[in-house]
Length: 188
Image (cartoon, rainbow, N blue to C red; front, side, top):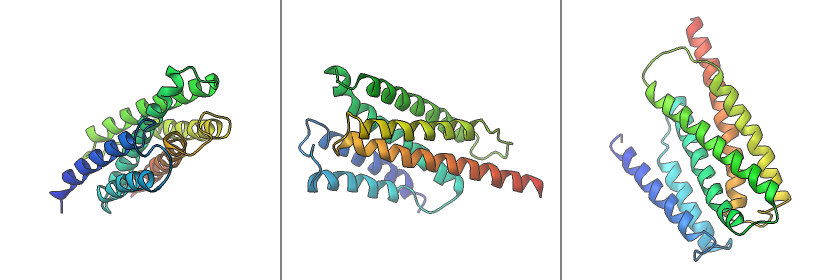
């Protein structure tokens, strides 16, 4: 029901924060295993519950929100690499730049989408272009940090890098799809 949706988002935020804390480098489930996957599995299931079947607009909103969330996990995973002077300086700088840029772009797009949720304004293609560029950046960054370092072993940095790839590509595809559907609806 509509009344349960805010509660589902609240539970998602709590389980997401819990997974970040318990699977961080100093947490009890810092190595992939039952506790690690149970923590993240609960967060993923909460995200699915918060995203009931609905409109393309809501799907795009939730995908962009998940892209921001995975970018934040990635930034948290990079903190020890920044603090303790990593051997992978170039990779860390590229990774933090990509994550920061994509989080800002996605936040602005999310804010603009919220401000124009119930309007039928003609959309420009800037969001589509930016999200496509962000998806390209994430593909390059995830490949670099998981194949060269610092996230060659599975953990929060590894999984959040590849999840960011999936969410950024999905957000770009949904944005282009929405543009095509908006164009068809305006032609009628």
